[in-house]
Length: 276
Image (cartoon, rainbow, N blue to C red; front, side):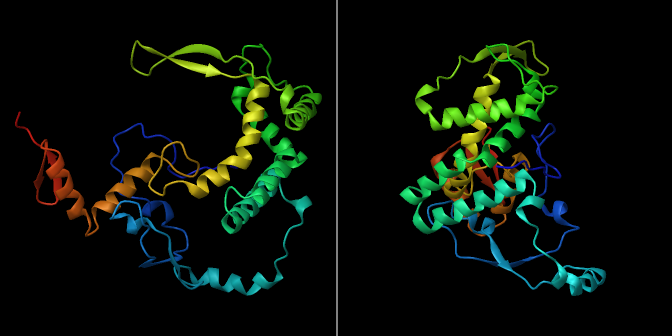
């Protein structure tokens, strides 16, 4: 998926004591109502509060100055494909793929053919190359000791053409071994292993991800937050806190206390049992 930057995103370095995502959208238009949709089946009983809600009218939460500017919205013209960035054009194609998968099903042949068409397109190959070349890791060599040479104008086109060859002739592809390095753990004397693929392998992985991630996100569990785009640790903490405020939490509390003797009830909270 295209890059995403959250106002409070990233991993939590301090204690996870966030109160929710409300401060992040304080200055934005409030477009959601408090009436939730029907709860999802097969998920936690108190996850109804996380479901998408209906939209309110255009003017809700907006300032008077914003409404005056709405009079000129009819003069807005849709930008042509040439005026859009690679990221924006790729995102449009990804959304079309998701809509097709919703209509036909993820495993339908038409969806598979669309994925093949996209992964072979020059647009997607160029964007995958752009993703790799713009990262600091492009200057970190793999086991082949090659890096992305930003000073050479030919580097971009060479990598784009390499992706074309591998996609059209997959039998010719053989992944290189992963370079293993050991990096120190923060605040500890221990080290952890880190695998570094070659630049070409990273570019090919990025290209395949562009057609896989949209469908993975389409079918992923709504309560999953680990290693997913547009989500982070603070969102998971906020989701748990919101769930604990619902009426269904009593069922969860009772179920936990019956199954785990190390947990006992105390008012509206679950606390560890100190008895051994």
